[in-house]
Image 1: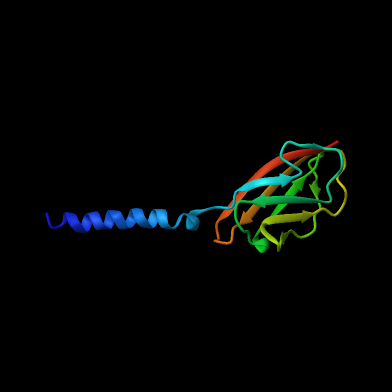
Image 2: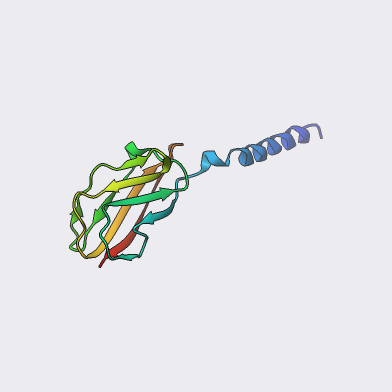
Length: 124
């Protein structure tokens, strides 16, 4: 019987630590973006704006954009909005032509977790 008390304490300690540190296991998830996923915009954007559920590390984050002819779209270096550290801005070198675009993004959150994803939009 004496050995069950330490076992219970260990279980309680493990449960408490699991609920006390949920942010340590969090990942930066894409919450919204401009242009929006599956959107058809009439004005070509000058930059893509991706917003995440937590702060991101700009030096390890970015995106590649593939155009209507499967060409790689040139961008300037991605940067984080310093007033909103959850926002990644990807400036475009040239205006986008009409057609469908694929955005393939990757980020590292401030706690070191990597996340990636894809979405599409089109320019009319």
